[in-house]
Image (tube, rainbow, N blue to C red):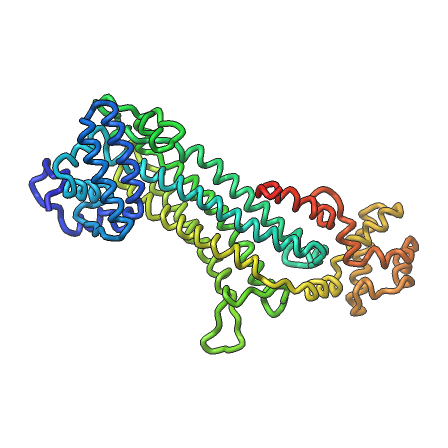
Length: 459
């Protein structure tokens, strides 16, 4: 098969080289974007009088025919044609004849592939923004259903202070809100058009880059042709955002795994998101959150991979940059699938409210409130802290919890203790006392929910 670029060469490409350098096995996912960019480009060529409008219509009809065949999965792509651009051009020439060869006037594969990736990532980013909203909505629904559910709050994985489960869930809502905002902001850089930059230096044809950008819905064009064909910052930014988001997905997955264990029993995941054991019939394994946690590593790897590819590249295009696509495509697929699973898994999980409450009545997480109590009585906090430490040690040694101690026992440590200490130590009081902005009291959590609903456009 004759190469579309083969005029300069006297030998056929080595078969191993052909397979090693071909990208069609993965960049065929950009087929529809490639046709979209070509339709805009040929329309612009016709409007600028660079090729006749009759030829423009023939090429457009040919491209639209190929597009439909691709959608219907009727197209076989060829490794011999290397990439999606050459495959479609070959198909076009077969479809409409030699006039199809006019399509590539005034552009290069260098600006063509960059355009394809801008179009692809713009579409995928818009979809991911909507999927993040679904996760946020699932978190919000569970938070609303657990306004009164009290659980242990942890630091260092040690019980620290009682909090509302809704408060804990909303912490993840705000993590995903920042992820969503980063995706939205990244669209400013994605929505630039490199089309018409040529191989690196522009073109001799009187093209109108702003017109092709307008036809493709781009906000602006790259002002520098070298930058246009060599920039992959927009992909790096996406991979960075995806890595941060996968960190958040991994963190909540870790908590779901812990909470659903026999030791905690705080939640139970729906059967549809778990699997069993081939040898232990009693097992219910949280495979989905485990795999979400595991897939974080591949997304990190894709970011590091592209950073490494780009770090020593001179301007403008180099074949190394073919390595920009697989990581981007894989990350889009991984993140998309992760978000689609996470939202319903959160929404359908059963919350064991009684188990959570039992946990906060059988620990020392209300100890800080005793210190605060003594401070309100006029004792300096550092002195109060030392006293409470001794009280906790005493309780542990006597196998008691703080609500089990008598007033006489409390007063043996400090005479400032009165009967009201037992009200102060109740888990509900401990939670409601933390009414500072952003705190865990039900009043503050309700205010958070109102803010969260506003972010989702629900109010």
